Length: 418
Ligand code: HAM
Image 1 (spheres, protein in one colour):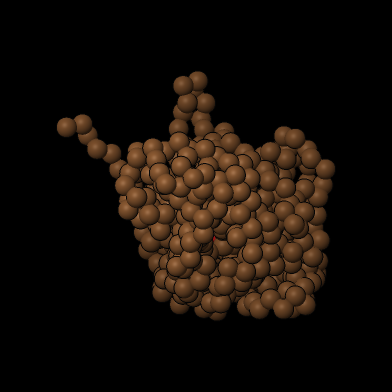
Image 2 (cartoon, protein in one colour):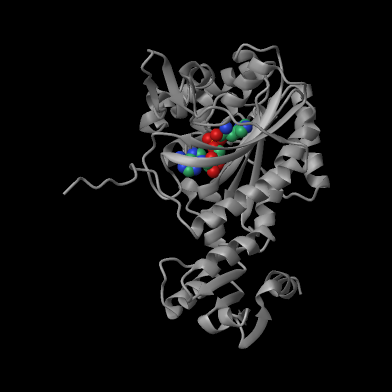
């Protein structure tokens, strides 16, 4: 027996009809952001590993979880663990006019310990805006994420925002945080007792009780913002308020990537387990373009994982699998030519239709018709064929009409349209 394979650990196949929901979510997202002036950017699935190591050296995503490898030409490459750095790399390479408003739908890869809502491959939807420091863009980006979720019907979504300051105010804040942590080093969790100095902000974000307790009264970045950062953060809050978007300030919100400056945000689904309840998030990264070799250029964006969003929808019982688009099913007991030709005619006339194959029995064809979700069956039997007619049968009601074969496309369109 040949070996049977399974999808690799932490990955999964998405099959119909569930895949229709994925398609619908991506289509909704595309419509939402395209209508707001964002254009699709498609970058390679893999990049020079430096694109990611340059921007995320201090993060688990880059240090521990990256799928990096050498190709046959000896280049060090990595499967993208996230979508922001590739978009920034693409802008530095092509220099499109600013502001550059982009969106993407892209699989991302992280070698994580798989569990519900945490996979080694996930599908990320995101937007990135390069080239403007305007706080109103922060509001626009956050509101698009919020509107996506509310549009799906999610009601138990919680928006958390924070400001991480900028190179003017953050260094002094980090000094005060380091001094605070130094004094409490023995009370931190096992991981952070030894690894706190390289990225003290991450200790604030640690979910372990020891760290949470030890940092309860830690200095807060929001209290240490310089004038321009404080003003920016105020303007973002005013904007969210004006748009009727509820939010809470979470001073511990640091997020798992290192490139953030000023506004950071995350949406949590309270219907999900807390370890994987972050369904989307993002923030400003005003230094990232420079880090990847471009001129000083501010940026902001978000990413949201399709799998987690759909888990949140399941938990709230919203955004079900959309109905099948098939409207008509052609049933043919005369040998299949009529099914072949009628299906093509109907499809060319814009009617969504399907058929069965292999000369199956009428009963089997009607079963397939029911499964297809079609409203109408167009039935061709020997008798109908001899008299130049076809039968149009409503599948959800007891109604049948005999129609001229030459008229059937127009008839079906009338019935479906009405
Ligand atoms: P992130 O928070 O690492 O941010 O990921 C964004 C979203 O991707 C998460 O909120 C979650 O929905 C989903 N996600 C992340 N990792 C996994 C996983 N292992 N399994 C399933 N879903 C996952 C970023 O990636 C940033 N690039 C977001 C951003 C865009 N910031 C600025 N612009």
